[in-house]
Length: 433
Image (cartoon, rainbow, N blue to C red; front, side, top):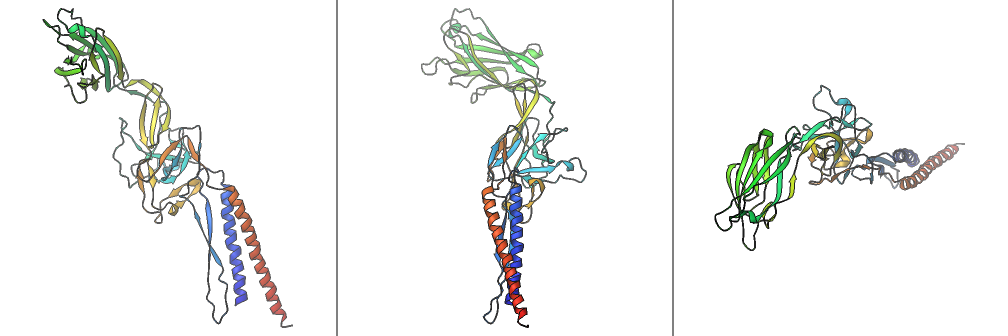
């Protein structure tokens, strides 16, 4: 019994070291595979209780697992849609072959990195056929309130390479100095005109015409101007008229004191903004809040448009797509503006090592991994999304070669046990002679 148990222990030793050799071979073979997670083989002894003072060898068994929670080093690339995760979390993907099917929701798998490029249909996908998944944005770039405990709201990230888009103007900030000398008694009261460009909903350049007319008193200084705003896109229709009074005190001299609305949207003293209602929508005109520097001012004797800051731009053609640290997929246009079109969430599970491993460094949720949750990158327990980057293999070649030597010696030693047992059994057989 004791000799035969030694034989069985030697056989089990050969088997487990063969398994360990297989994991080492896999690790070395995938040392240059992006996103590969190292396999390990752990040995556990088996104990058989013998009676009568004898001992029986129980042998050894092996268990293998993949170190999915072990991060690999990140390297930079030249592709803006090469993605990796700095920290916890995984990127959702789906097989391209499943897109367009009629079987219901798309299967969702997880990866830690990927090189995504648009195919002939504009879908961001890897060479191995994995499409990037994300939440689609509204036309204004906001992300709807999708549930975070289901993959239902995700869809393949689709980019129209020949897409044109406009960026309408929604806000204009004025920095204009009005001459204080024009509001004195006896001045000529000459109006001052200012034209401000804006872009409508079709990306066409339009003009707002602003006329500043000083209020000339019979005596002294009025420190008051009438501001008339006309929209030239509708033939010079008046969209707002306001009386602006300026402060002449020592500490706040030249700043706005008050604004009274004659017509149009009401001036908000808290923000310094006037909502101008145009046919295509509202444009917020920022002239400055009372008692603050900037916006409209009344100093000295010169009319000086110091700055005009506005958003919006003419129609542009999509030139590239980039992903920021929060996972937002932004379309970049040659007119100088960008628009958020998707948000790629990061998927987190309590036990990443419990995920089911598949081909092409993909993983799926299992009962051992625990339930998943979708986070915006950089929030909660998940890390940030890193563009222009790939995650390298977690294989350490030097460590694997060292283990290869150890495995070879262990295999040879177990083979020697079998050889020794065979010789001992032969001696036992020779007793009969």
